[in-house]
Length: 175
Image 1 (tube, rainbow, N blue to C red):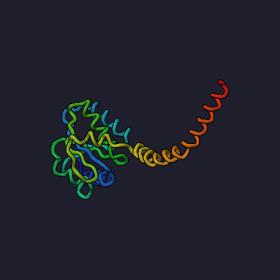
Image 2 (image 1 turned 120 degrees about the vertical axis):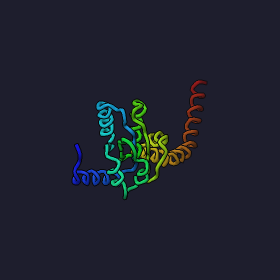
Image 3 (image 1 turned 90 degrees about the horizontal axis):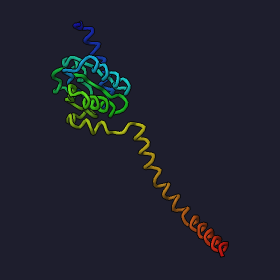
Image 4 (image 1 turned 180 degrees about the horizontal axis):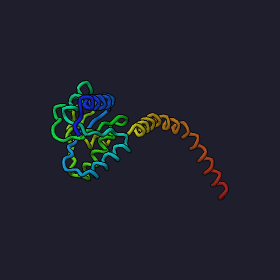
């Protein structure tokens, strides 16, 4: 079904709004995917809070003009499905990269992170980025480590003295 002018403007506005708020984006060629495979990809994207959309390339070029994803404009050729990661930068790479491993008909064409166009092979690096919760846990562990070591250093002489007294007591009880 062909879109009228108002429908096209609505699609451009919707994709533009999502692209302006996205941390990362992935474009993949989906030629040869069946409807059930495409539905499976959409369900996986929805579960990871990834915005997935098939848009005509001319509309997509207009939608990304004033966003960080503008770096992808030149490569928008062929049948593409666009994925935008709103909350977690690596979510779109995990969804689309994982799906591309299982289905050879989905070929990753472009990856954008923070306004920079990355090679399609960099999707693995993006997918391995920690989630927000994982990053907070890593940060907290790093901040907590020096304090733990300091406390262990403060407690070491006292615990060593207690172990020495216990050893002397055990020696006297044994004799």
